[in-house]
Image: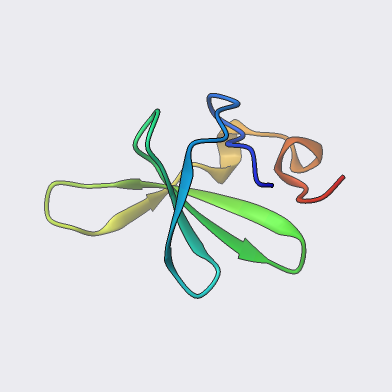
Length: 63
């Protein structure tokens, strides 16, 4: 089970292939090579990376 690196919630919904959404803090997550990438959805629908806010260890999936 995936846990949000931002809020530690497990209330994660799948929105696409390897794409997820945290219903607690409203960020989009994607999974690539065992690393969770975090994104903020902007008003225009574009995504801004939030990866620089977290250590790579915090973004490891399945560890």
